[in-house]
Length: 436
Image (cartoon, rainbow, N blue to C red; front, side):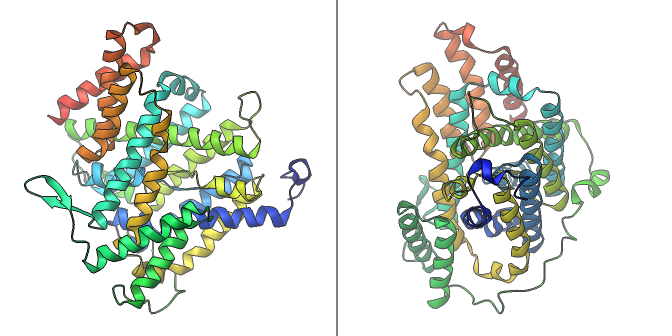
């Protein structure tokens, strides 16, 4: 292992790498409980999703560590799971099994475009400002879901939404969790989101809001309800032209968000670890193949898109430099399979603060948008605002991609628009016609 991961070259050792792997795991362990809750809203069995989440994270992270040798962990991504549940399943009325097939297809396409080298062309075609807007918009969307789950925001006939009853026990517990987790994050505590969930759950049990679990360690929940469901349902579905069009949009959105989320996270964490030289990333193809393979594997197991987690930066900050960090993190995800009884304490009041603060972190990309350029500001703002307000990540992306060529042409910057953006303009115009 020492020689394979080149510990001496990177000035590290087993202890340092192991501590970094544990730090990364604790920073992203919240996904084990948040993902089943979100996908549970789509009608999926939470126990099965817990197992699928842990296995997808373990397999993807181990592939990243052993094959690509990067200290980057993977798991079902926030934002993509929200798109899966609230836009695809609940919004479009697509069965969750068919949505899983869409995730599987996006992973296969990702593998193909990585192998043939198309990824660079696609990345270069999408304006950087729109990439920042998409990331920020997803952050606001996730935060909005968290605010709703905590009942900080409730439906209102007169104003669409309004402030909820803060004296409600569940809402008060969520407010406590938000306060505690915010303090931990501001103090720079590694795994602050995870620890915040633990403290909130314990407080909820003490005051009697949350049920006390009968055990901490238990048997691994069965995957029978989700494993292979992406394929078994295909023969039972009537593939109308409308459904085919919907599936194309779904697959492209899964692909788009995962594509740029992975590229951004990979570059950021690799740069932090000292891998980036002359603006080039070594073994980038291997890293992207690891991510895309994990997506397809996760879909077979029964979870939404698996992607690189920016929380991996916490492990690098703790001294991690090689793929051994990912090996440790992946093994810890396997161990976590035995802690499913804790799912009973992870209520919406416990996960809501995590969703809100993950949204805050994702929305940090807003600072990178050139708001002083109105031709950029308009499509970027529409992208960001439309996601939470229409409850659809896909609609937000579509609005930004439609308005960008228009504002740029009016500004006289038609030469700065990549031909691919014109193609996407007509694709998303057709998307809005289809929605109508």
